Image (cartoon, rainbow, N blue to C red; front, side, top):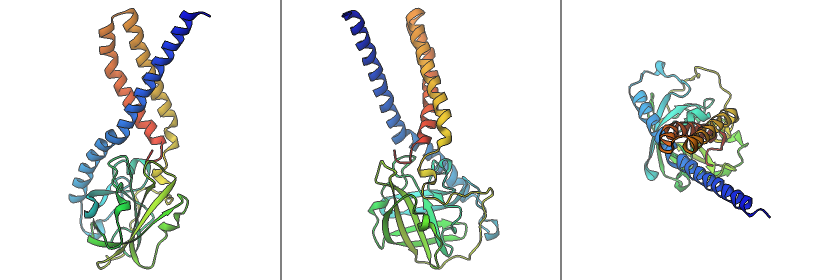
Amino acid sequence: MNWSAARLALGTLGRVLIAAGMLILAFVGYQLWGTSFAEARSQERLVEEFRGGPTALEAIRAVPGGAVGLIEIPKIGLDKAIVEGVGVAELKQGPGHYPRTPMPGQPGNAAIAGHRTTYGAPFNRLDELVAGDIILVTTAQGEFRYEVESAAVVNPKQSEVLDNTADSRLTLTTCHPEFSAAQRLILTAKLATPAATPIEVKPDSPTSIDSLDAGLSGDPTARWPAFAWGLAAATVAACARVGARYWRRIPSYLIGAPIFLVTLFIFFENFARLLPANV
C-alpha cells in the first residue's frame, strides 16, 4: 500500500470536511442573524413608508411589497410593518398580507403570513398566544383591536383557512414546528372593534398566491442562481489558494478574501430562497 498517497488522500478529505463544516456553520449564522439584519432595514423603510403615506380611504392601495399596515402583539413583543403579498420577496421584509383576502379591519377573513425563525422571525412566538390575547392592527382606515380565539395546526394544502367568512376576523399563518415547514400554525382572532367600511383593494399587479405554501415553502427559481454563485465562490477560493501556493500567500488571500465573502453572501441569499421559511 502506498502510505504517502493514503495520507495525502486522508489529509485532503479532512480539509474538505473542515471547510464543509465551516460553510454550514456560516450558513446557519446567516440564516439566524444575517437575514434578520436585512429584515430590520426593510422594516425601517416600510414603517416610514406607511406613516408617510396617504390616509384617505380613496387612496388605499396594495402595491406588492409595499407597506399596508402595522401589526402589534404586546404579549410577545411583536411590532412590525405589514407588506402586501406573501411571496418569498415580500416575506423577507416582514409579515405579509394575503392579496385575495380583505384588508385587516374590514369585514371578512383578513389573513397575514410570517416567518418563524428567519428574517426577523416575526411569528416565532405565535404559539404562546391564547384565547383573549390582544392583536392590534393599524391600516389607512384606522386602528383595529382583535382578540385571539383559537389556534390550530394544519397541512400546508389546507388553504380553506384563508376562505372569506361572514364575521370579521384575522388569521395569522406560519410554519410549524420550529425549524420545519411540514405543517402550518394557524391563529384566529375576532375583531373586537367596529369594522371598517368595506373597500375592495386590488393589487397593482395580478397575483394568485392563495396557498399556505406561498413564500413559506421556498422559491425553486433560485436553483440556478444558487448553483452559479456557489460555483463562483468555489472558483474564487480555488484561485486564492493557487495564488498563495505559486505566487504570494498574503497578497493572494488579501485579494481573494473580500471577493470570496461577497460571492459567498450572494450564494447564501439564493440558497436560502430555495429552502422553506424555517429551515
